[in-house]
Amino acid sequence: MSNMVRKANAFEILNHWVLAVTFFILAISGFGFLFHLEQMNSLFGSFDQMRVIHNYAGLVFAVSLFLTIFNYLPVSLIFTGEDIIWILKGGGYFSKGTTVPPQDRLNAGQKGYYLLLLLTGIAIAASGLIIWLRPMIADINRWVLLSHLVHNISFDVLLIAVPSHIYLATLANPGTFRIMVYGTVPLEWAKKRHARWVEKKGY
Ligand code: HEM
Image 1 (cartoon, rainbow, N blue to C red):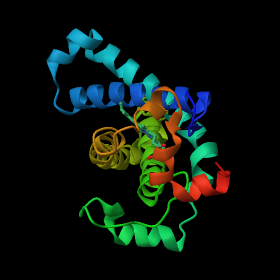
Image 2 (cartoon, protein in one colour):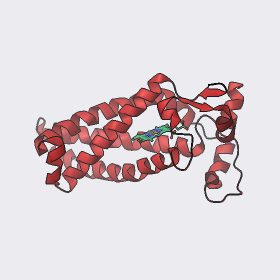
Image 3 (cartoon, rainbow, N blue to C red):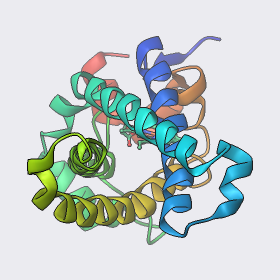
Image 4 (cartoon, rainbow, N blue to C red):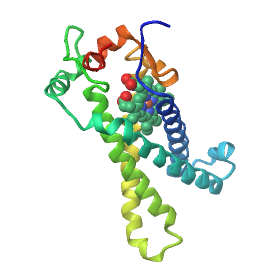
């Protein structure tokens, strides 16, 4: 199709699916542990099996999150004056007439979401690893209580952040979901939402 621009490459698309699928496995099994939901046995077989699946899905999630660093961290660390105005105007989401400054490959909200995801992801993965290793290393017992607290708080943050991200990447911004499937968007779509990026790329 003509006039399409690439916003995500094949690796980013694949890695994003790994992140999404492992997140849902972790969230569903996490709820199972939190509320001792016996019904989860119909999905995972038993609580022991659910624990094994949760732990290994956590490992894959952590590796997948680490791999996002190369594509998203450099752009997410730079907040320009235009980004600050975008934030002050709430991204234009709260009033129809509001115009927002041109944005880079990720808008200021996406940069904030990515940084939050990275920090929370590191916290949930590190605390999860300590809880997992508990039976093997006697000396880490004093860290285990703290790890449970960090694991649960990070889970709460992700339970708000990820559904918000999914809403913004689908219903709130029609045409965005195709990035997750094809990696491309129409040039007009990109000019409207990421004008600074389009300008830098010279499209
Ligand atoms: C089925 C659920 C999901 C959908 C439909 C979805 C959709 C999308 C889309 C369309 C983009 C591209 C946005 C753009 O480039 O303008 C994106 C980016 C991204 N997604 Fe997701 N996503 C989902 C789940 C997740 C999960 C579970 C995570 C991590 C826990 C995640 C992390 C990210 C990150 C870090 C980016 C790049 C930054 C951003 O665009 O906000 N996504 N997602």
